[in-house]
Length: 165
Image 1: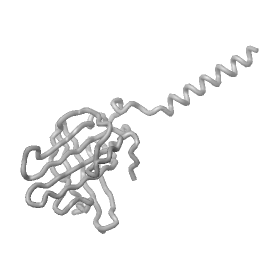
Image 2 (image 1 turned 90 degrees about the vertical axis):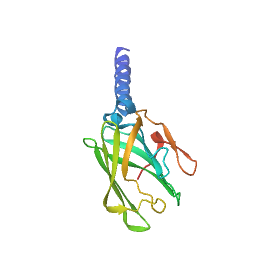
Image 3 (image 1 turned 180 degrees about the vertical axis):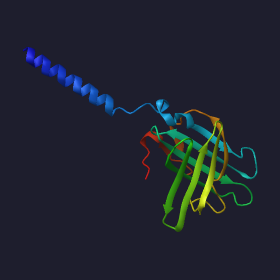
Image 4 (image 1 turned 90 degrees about the horizontal axis):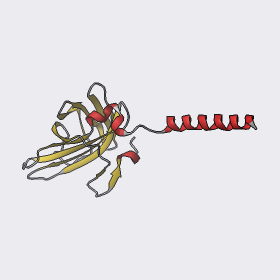
């Protein structure tokens, strides 16, 4: 009987350790949580505006959603989401598209209260509307970890469930 209790105790111990290792960290505990939040540019202007939501995925990666609108006269817009590996506050987003040889590539640099996005290698074919580009300086509005975003098609996407290429 004692042997059976020992086997049961050992099984429970191994199971609990395995479950603890499988459990993901709370996003607020990740190294990339310091970049989380909402960043915007151009609020209240006629030249357009943009918003980037940043979600800490792991200690070294973030998920983001960006939506951008240009002002007069075209009022074009664009949005996309993706994953970026961050090292020392910097990362590069890159995506090839079916309709362009160049694709989409930009750097993301985080400072205390800003996110700076710069197009790299003239690769600005991100699937946005005509004349819509992601580059610019985005001011941090808050450091709240977003749970979800609503895209231009009015569809809600939860960051925890997001499938990114």
